[in-house]
Structures are given as C-alpha cells and as structure tokens.
Length: 425
Image (spheres, helix red, strand yellow):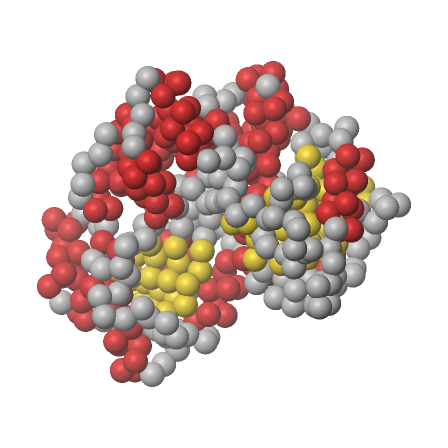
C-alpha cells in the first residue's frame, strides 16, 4: 500500500513508545480513521485480512495456520485481525516464544466479544485507541496553545485571529476522516453518509453474522444524533424512535444495538467523572452520548452550513461533539483520562481531563463568546464545591473552549479562554 503523502498523527509517538516496551500493539478505532496508514508507517511487513485477492487467500491462510500469517519482518502489521480471532492468541504465543519487543501491530475496526480464545494478552499486547483526525492533526488548528504547557503552568496570552462561524460548520460537516481533508465540502459530506450506510448494511452483520432490521438501526442512529452530546436515558431514545416512525424496539434489543455501535467504534461516549465531594452530593453515573466524529450526527441530521447557521442549538451540540473528539485525542496523547460531570445540584462540566498525577482540567464548551461569563461562573462554583474529605484537593485549572474567540487568554477570575482552532495537546 502506497502511504506517500502520509500526514503525521499524534498517535505515532505512542505507537513507537509501545513497540519499545511491549511485544505487540493493538490499535483499535473506527474504519477509515487512518489506523492502517499509521501502522504501515511503523511496520516492516504486513498482511491484510480484508484483501480480496485470491478469494481472500490471506484470511484463509490465517484460518488454516495463524502462525504462517505471522511470518515476516518485524514489526509486522496484521490488519483487521478480528476477521480471524485466533490470530490474537497466535500473536500472544509468538511474543512469549520470542521474548522480544515490537514484534506485531494489530489493527481492528470492531471489538470481538472475546478477543483471545485462551488469553487476554495482558502484558504482551498493549492497546491504543485511534479516532479520526483532530483539528491540530488536520492542520485546522494552529496549535499555538498547548494543554501540556498549561498543565505545567506555562501559558502566554496570544491573539489567534478571526474564525468565521461558517468555517466551523464546515469542520463539523467534514469531520476528521483523513481522506476528506483535501476534499470540497460537498464531496466530504458524502463520506460519513456512505460510512453509516456500510455499517448498517454490512459491518453489523459481519460482527456476529446475525441479521437485524436496518430501518430500526437507522432510527436509533437518528435518535442518538438528535441527542448528540447529551445525557439521556434509553427510554428517551425509545420514545424518539417511536415519534419519528411509529416503530420501536424492546429495551433488551436497544441495549444490544447500543453495544454494537460501541463495538464498531461508531459511538464514543464520555464516561461520568466521580469526585470526592461532600457526601450529600449525588453524582449522576450516566454517560454523555457522543459519536466518534461530529460528521456522523451531522450527516444523520442532514446538516448543511445554512441549516446549522439557522439552528444554533443543534450547531452548539455538534460543535461540542467536535471539541470532545479533539479533547479525547489530546487526552490519549497526554496519558490522561477524559470524562464529563453532572450532579443532582445542577452542576455540570462539559469535560474533565484527569492527568496521571491527579491534576484536573475542567472544560466548558461554548460556540460563541456571549456566554463566557456564565461559563466561567459555572466552573468556579464547581471548583469551590470541592472538599478534601480527608484527601488533598487536586490542582484544578478551569478552561472555556470557544469556537469564535479571537484570542487565548486568562480572565481576571483565573479561567482560561482557549480557541479550539488554536489548541494542541
């Protein structure tokens, strides 16, 4: 495969670091996000389970003799390994036999229910998550503001330039798919549409070879899109499906479908963040539902630049999805966890990044600049609600990520304002 023109990704450094420590690296993420290209950039040989040449001879070889499929110069890329699940145990076994680092790179665009038939691979096969490109990776963020530097106490106010609202709609609709970066917006908008069609018509069946109603799958995807970046219950999703088409599914089927979307990396929900706050505060444990890329809900909602500019509420939710995608990528690069916060005192934080040393970055996400004071006040009240409870309160930095801010700066109240088009990890 020709990888000329490869655009470097943040995950490249992590891949190399893991190859230096572990016998194998497994890179998981949605189709078309660039896993294969990034892996080829680190591999010295490769085999593709999805190659149709010779009536899928690579897959048939791997099924007959997994060990033969692993022969080749190392690191050896095993692309779409989940097509032959026995490869997982074969890689783990060969890593043990050789006792060397950096032997294999496995890529997968779906998660089998049981990765290894005999062994989990713990200690031998390290795992990395890959997503579509962040704005910094695609060249749509200048990267003049570093989150890593901010964590270290290094921050300098900077003018970052004007950002047109219409440009932000284009970034949402286009998404971070590597193949779309140089396309016109009209052409790029076709990519998420075809992606979702391929998932519903083909990938879901391949996952476990069970037929499911494609119309109900589409209805559920549309219901999820309507509530992108929201904390909602399964009952709300069921109600929306019924209101849209007069059809619905039972709760068990809904749970199965949601699990399938997760296993195919279509959805990428934010887990709830739990703090050591005073005991009377009940922290809600529901996920914030999000797609892996904002272009997917935008496509499901038939979004165009004109439609988003005429409905800023929907646009705001899709913009939050774009920012959340980037924060997830940056957190992975920084070795941090990423969550959302909500409690029964009506306190919410759009995203909370937890560094390995416990340092927290709390983010409110605002499309415009008209509600910066409100966002800052909300963050400050959340920070002030912390109590040690026998433990040291962590260092907390408060940040507002804005779409239209012309500068990165620290407000008099200590809250940082950071334009998304200037951010990098």
